[in-house]
Each structure stands twice: as C-alpha cells, then as structure tokens.
Length: 392
Image (cartoon, rainbow, N blue to C red; front, side):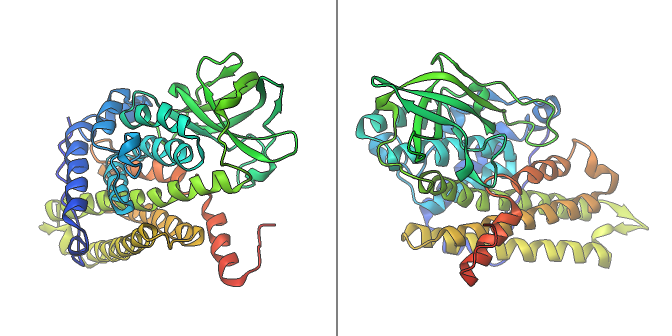
C-alpha cells in the first residue's frame, strides 16, 4: 500500500488567513484522505472502479453539502471550508472530489435553493450522510456548451409529468438513487425535476473505457416515458438560471480542488528531486529542476490567494459567475501544467502507479473540460470585460 507523505505547501503563509475552524475542517479531511484514499486509490484507478465503500466516510467528514444548514443535515459551514474540503479530496483523487462535488453542489444545492420545504426535509438529510446519492442531468449527447438547446422534455399529464430524453457524461449516474434533471416543459421553459431510481422507464447505463476519472462512476440518464410525480418538480427553478447557479457552486469547488492536485504534484516532485541523485548529487541541485520547482510553487501560491479571496466574496454574497469562471479556468490549467512538469522531474518513474502524477494528469484532462470547458470560461471572462458575447 502506498504511504502518503504529503506536506502542505504554504509559501505565503496563507494559513494565517484561515480561521481555526477552517484548519480543523481541512485537517480532518486531509487525515481521512491519507488514511482511507491514498493507500487504495491507485489500485482502484488501475481497475477503473469506484471505491464505493468511501461514501460513508465522505458523509462523516462533512464532504456532502458542508454549506447546507444544520437543520437539513448539513454542517452549516462557510464556503472557504467547502473549498478546503474539495482541495483535500482532489489531492487524493479528482474522481473522489467529483463524487462529493456532484452530491454537494449539483444535487443538494438545487434542492436547498429551489426545492420546497417538503423536498428539503425528505432528501437533504439522507444526501448529507450518503444514505442517498445523487446525480445531475444537464449535458446531453447533442448539447454540451449550449445547455439551452437541450432536447429532454416533459409534458403535463394531469396527475404526473411524462419525461422523455437522455443525458450523458453524468458523474454518479450508475449508482445514483436520485437525479436532478433539467428539461423543457411544453412552453419551452427549463425546469428541474427530481427523478428517483425505480421509476419505470428510467435507466442509467455506465460509461466504460475511460482514460480519465477512472475512480469515478460515469454514465447516462435515459428517460423513456418516465412518470414523475408533480411534487418532484423544483418549484423555484425557472429557466437556465437554475442549472447555471448550481454549476457556479460546482465550479467554485473545482477551483479549490484543482489546487489540491497541483499541491500533490509539486510536493511529490520536490521530495523526489531531493532524494534522486545523478552525477553524484541530488537532481534538486540542478538549475533546470529548480526552475521547474520554483515556477510550480509560484503558481500554486497565486492560486491559493485567488480562491481564498473568491471564498470570502462568496461568503459575503458578492461573488459573480464570471469571477468563478476565472478561478476555475486558471486553477485547472495551472494544475495540469504543474502535473506535467512534475512528471518530467520524475522521469520514467513518473509514469508508474508508484506515484500519482499520471493519474492526476489524466483526471485533469477531464476537469479542464467539464463544468464549462476551458475555452468557454475564457469567453465568459471576455464577455464580462467587453460586454460582447463571443459564443452566440
């Protein structure tokens, strides 16, 4: 079993900006990752298998809906705490963080924000513990970056809604107990529905042969004349703003999560460079290796300050979707570059499962695309600063 020797890089003493509660939450998540995730994750990645036994532990450390109020089973934490948990989970593996992100931001968040009181009481406490697991159905085979073009539809049949359509690239789909599904009504308005496993005509085939996110279960959501009870409609969600608000929460968590993967890669490369000798001395003594390591810690430090500031803005209700886009795009690109450089520091050893670098690299190739592609996020920033939408 792999031993997790991770030491937290903090070049600008960002820890001094955190509260004691933030550090307690982060350290609890970190110790859980070291104990439960790191020793087994390479084996599960090689097998392309989701470690389902980790779900209970994720619930116990508060990784499911940490910002959800305690009255609904959440921990009632702030958004910096949420970010720090995502950082630690993705340091372990992007697939594990994805599982928690979907549950928190894409399933619990919309029920909390747009659901009825009955829906909140029924679903949120069980989602918080992991007794129920959820998925988020927005992306379709023909509509990724343009979710407003979705073809999934539902019709009012008097006593129920009749849902037809399909979603794909859905994390947690193969084992989800419920799915938050976005579909158009007969007037063409986008609404949210809670679809439960066991409803006739609802199936979730798994997506296989992935090179990325191999420890995360990915699948489709298929609806063939599914009868959805009317009480399963999210009453406060109307239009594309509903799912996009959820994606803002998920993208915020990703900005922190990618930072965790970058930290893990940097620390792995630093430790290896100090231990590996060539030409009679550690390779860390050579200028080119020091250049790589110095640039890594510089970019990590900038990213730490970026998400810390964004977290404070989000706590104050002052953050914008465009600010979240910038952080997601910047931090994932940063992490991917650092993982690639770290792999080079390790040479051939970097491609083996003894080290996490190739696993992080493959995972981040998905993270840079999902929850809004790298290019779309760039255009969101462009739109925000010019007022001209380039993607329409």
